[in-house]
Length: 91
Image 1 (cartoon, rainbow, N blue to C red):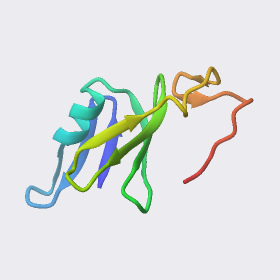
Image 2: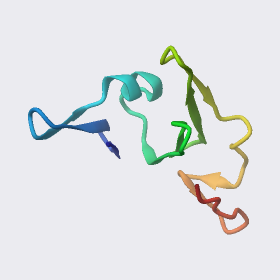
Image 3: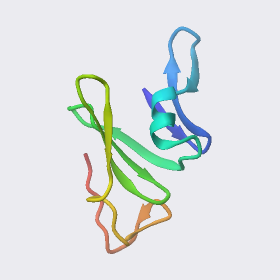
Image 4: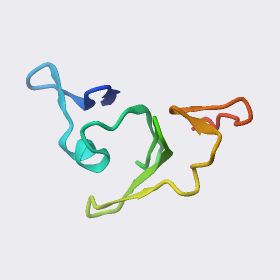
């Protein structure tokens, strides 16, 4: 389970019963990422919306990742939220 915050991305660590910084996602997005939403689909792809863009992180069998954001971004995303002209697409 992962959560986005203003201070980076965190995951729940069962052993310490606490939320700890997620090394993998903070490396992918950077530590000051302003991620507003993360959502995993049934294939393990992670869709995201940040303050400045949106996209998907896809992982392969070797845990390598690719970030795709070009097809998601358009001028209607402003400050991490769609404008009235943009419709939400739920996963």
